Image 1 (cartoon, rainbow, N blue to C red):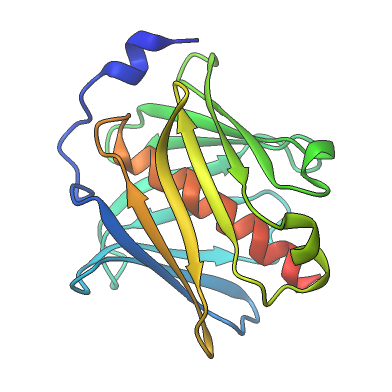
Image 2: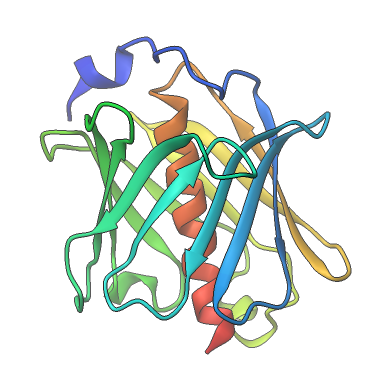
Length: 198
């Protein structure tokens, strides 16, 4: 496990508080929109995730006008059981890490490996709670956790709301670059949305 990378202080980032809210609409036709805000409502990330592209590739923006790109997230494969999603800094092109979906292990419970920029496994992303029951009753709130170096780097808990999906994220900014941890959280919620749309 790459301990040096996990202990690095995260760079200056718009993600510095420890609590965030992610919201998306229940209904989507051509794209899913995720908005990440601080608890006082300040937008920090925006994702418009296309639903009809063969290879998953999308940008995480810092503003509603989509004029300030933060991250690029791209799948390495068009079709695969264990998709790898590379997360890079949009301004510098620097690789922040990779999130690898565990396809067969995710049938009952979503599971992902988290890799550092050189491909070493440094953590995991896992669905928590009554995951099997949620496969049959999607209205049940979801719960995911990001683990880095054996510690919880983020806790993503869904709050029941009418007409919208809302998730409260408790983030440990000291774990790794908080932008990468939030990208992990967004990929978990995108995987969940894709499953619900089937």
